[in-house]
Length: 134
Image 1: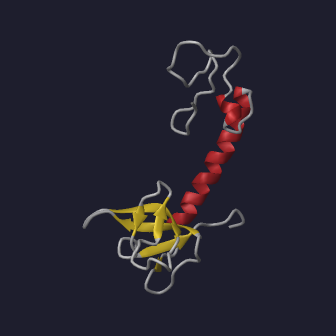
Image 2: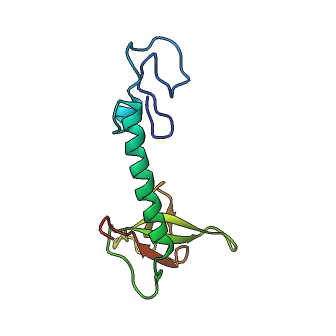
Image 3: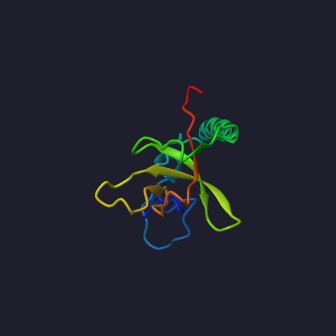
């Protein structure tokens, strides 16, 4: 089975899988399954564009003005970058979604992209993610 961490199209010629045994015939379809062109050259062109776009977004995030949770909270369901406090000395930028539960006000309102939950004191600052237009 294919996962984002370990792509596997099930083909006997899959270039990403380490599995053996009975598999389907035909070329590796992992690149196409990930949304890239089947040709290696065309896929490389698509990937380069995406890498450059992601680098530009990361650069924009490094210049982002951070907002204190005490001053303002994001909209419910808004995807943001938060400065999550992992320990007394470690702080990490992490993708978060703000989902407060009015029925359970003591539950952590931040959900990370790996489904970990963070409280308001764990994430004292947040920043909006730049849009494609910025």
